[in-house]
Length: 171
Image (cartoon, rainbow, N blue to C red; front, side, top):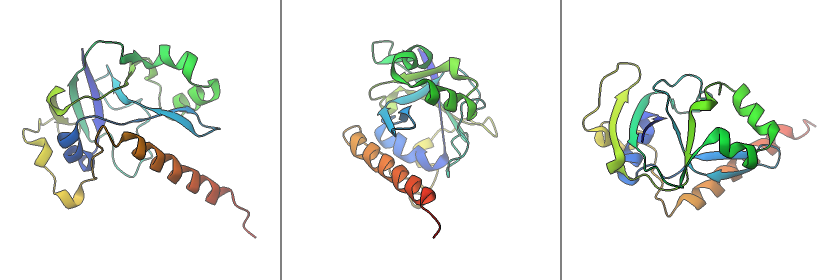
């Protein structure tokens, strides 16, 4: 099944090396709980997926991915009913996720060979040598499939730390 994944230039080198291995799927904002899965969509445009607010512009490039249709691929809207709290679902949609009906999760590894196209969203130009398009010093380190749990632990730890720092009393 052909689906899309949006990302930034800073992530292309790591994706080219390791494939699509991680994605933060929040299941409960209040408990800071979540799962690891790759976010995908059937929508060709980046709008309406809640991709804003990050340091990296996750709307910069559209990856076309040939995704295996097996039990690792789920429609988010169906999966979320039994795995995501109502409050968290509402917050995700309110944060720019009005295209939630087009979302999919892939609970596994999508190797680089399954990425059939990388296109600049701004220019519409297809990148031929997308893994080496941007300098290594401007790229984020990729995450291997084996390293995905350590990545998630760091990400949630950073979020918890930032959350407690913003809620501390000013005196």
